[in-house]
Image (cartoon, rainbow, N blue to C red; front, side):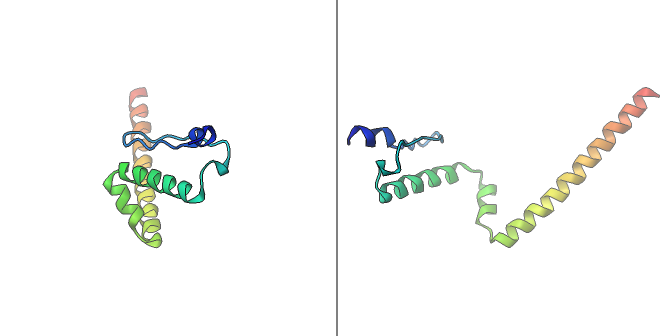
Length: 94
């Protein structure tokens, strides 16, 4: 492996995910880039919690619906917490 290729070599350690840089796209052949990126994708996907992987595996429409519903639930929860906080401030002033 020449010096240019050595600088562009991508490390895919099983316990870490990080960015690397190559000085030129020509440092690796297209097939090598595809292999490295596929391996990085598999490592990244493998580190995600099962629930997230399940959501990502859903069809797009179902995933978008689930996300919309979750945002509504979280907004309601935040509004409830904000109201409770305001009520406690009013009670403290009284």
